[in-house]
Length: 327
Image (tube, rainbow, N blue to C red; front, side):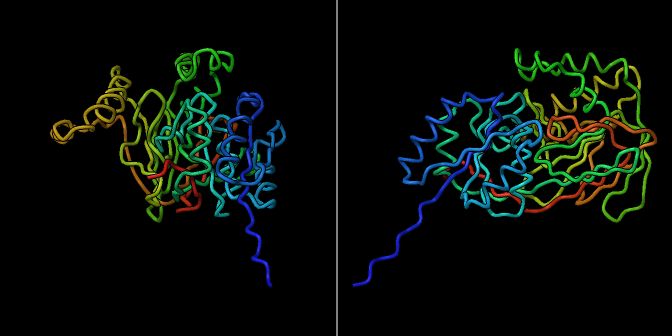
């Protein structure tokens, strides 16, 4: 009599930043959930200064992980997603950072560890896009990376570079207010040339330019109201305040129009009847190339990535599978 073939149990892997997580609490939650779900023993991988998560995630894929839980800040989540690109292996986000950008945009739990772990083992799967970027330095060296939420050139990248790590631990995303204050002495417009898709090359002067796969920032600020993580399109926002009230107009656009008025039919009608705020310019496309006169600070998902002389960004549609709450 032939025996029925043994069904191989699913296995999860956890990639965690030891500086961001309570490892004992995390292990207790994962072990209890894996046991209840009937999964095999979870594999554990620690990030390091040399490996933000890409190499250990590749190892988790080779070992047959069905889902990789990224436990850490936005940098850890971004690194894990970069390695999972196109693999079909799902990403589960266990937020433990300051911004938690992807979790906010996908409406995932921000502070409930057990709920996040439960989604990893029993949630639904959703395909989203990845933003891709090739960064070229002043010396010609280049790097290619993925981003989940936003890539920024200019003031926003300076703000991130100038934000105190100790202050971020103490007060969270509000520390970026201090980063903005520290960046003001360096505040000056950037001249750059850009090419969107196959359109002609154009020139523009901006204080910052942000390419987004998602549009929501900490504090409920909706920078890009039309950005969707699964529409196969990148949204671009150029902030170019002009005159003594330029920054006030930028704030009105982002905080009031995008964050408040767009949430109601009446508010959207008010926006339609109002004069457009020219200090914030929006465009969309699938690929964008930018070149600056002088190297500028650059950031990906809230982490500084040095200075860039030119940047090529493009969208990789549906390249990442993410665990979300079950319907």
